[in-house]
Length: 221
Length: 221
Image (cartoon, rainbow over all chains, first blue to last red; front, side, top):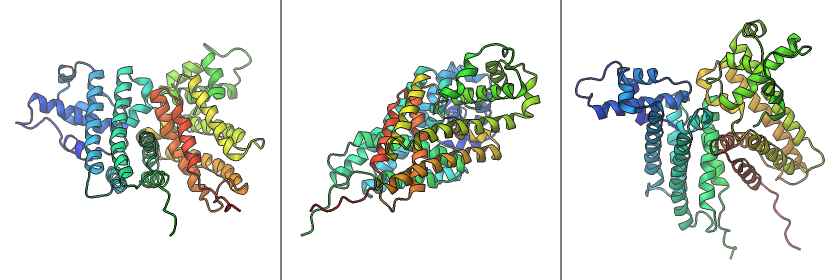
């Protein structure tokens, strides 16, 4: 899962914020964006607060003023990433111009292009943090789980539309399928990152769609 | 993927090695075992050399004597984990007492029990390091990819036996299926760890087996 649109501004901007962009809420948002970009690439353990502030071009002293604690900051980063990704999903999964299963394929192509754009350095922030769960509080762990559950609900809506059109069997367990998609997706993102190869994403989607329960073809007349 | 049998001795032993177990090769092996255990739980970024030596009960000065560099040490850890896991796979996948697909289920049950035994703190060392690939050398990256490829070959052998028995369609792309199994597996391990729930592993296996291409049933007489 790339952070393309989301992360571009903070990483391109160097040094102090320019005049006019330094209102507190913008500063805060810039730090969160830098956190999303860095944690999507390196995970939480390898990312220091200094690095985040540096990438956002914010003076060191302001971190605790804005966030109170690293824990609060991480929670905001998880929420921001979840929101960003959820908007990406909505753009694809709610696209009424394409049939539901083609929307899933379009999302996967978008995600693969995003990973390629960052030379497969960036994976999925939720996956990175999930892998590092030993270093996280229970609260943060629950926030990551809730993020996955949100994505599952969005995909389930899309799959329900496929059921309504008769593209998937009416008795398909849509919630279970949606959950399985994201579980496998995390593995595919990991392998794509490790092997710098977006085909892991495409293959996951292809196999997911091929394995969906279908309505039996009507008997030949 | 648990490190159960592999990791038990070093983590249980505290302090200096007991007399008689301190031969150089044993010391070296103890450090590698401690590395496997710690990296399976925390990943490479969160694990310091001091922690590893501490867990192994080895004095600090000896690390570079044994391994030369952290890079060499990590390579040995990856190889040791790969070997350990490969032996676990061989035990299940080559078990002639069970049909091939049941062997896959038995492996999954074993892995799930291993994760539960460590309260889902330990995942898969190859997956942890794969997620942290930004922090790794290209050499190490290739060692992790080779580890996955080894597991794929072992699973492919098992699936070939299923084809030979007629349990899977003769034209099944066994190599592709084996690769897909491990890709999804990494996602399932991540979610099992995050949500402390082995059902992610069982579900992955169930869906993998259900989606295998089957021979068409012979037409009813």
